[in-house]
Amino acid sequence: MMSEGVNAKSKENSKLLVDIQIQLACIEKTIEVIPTLAAAVETLREIARNADQYAKSAHQRLDQLQIAKEIADEALRTAQSAIAAQNTQKEDQKWFKRTFYGSIITAVASGVVATLWAAFKFSGY
Image (tube, rainbow, N blue to C red; front, side, top):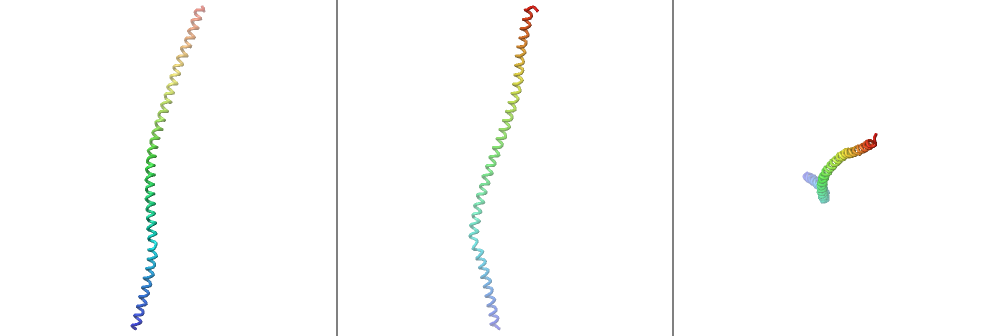
């Protein structure tokens, strides 16, 4: 009976050793991928650093564009104000020209009337 117990124990130990060997083989298979994963992770880190750097650079360019837009908007407001002032001056010049030419036309017409009046007076009518 004793040999059956030892034999059973030996089979059980052998089975446990085979199970352990199978588990070790699975662990070794899993560990084989780790160096490849480490290289891939390092590559991804480098890509992430570059993406972060590009994003910061783009953010700075956007800030500069915002400043340029604000300057352009201010220039547009100044130009529109200058155009409005110029249009006001044109209107003032129209009024001045009309007044000036109107007074000249009135003076010439008065001179013509005075000349005709004087001519009638001298002619005896």
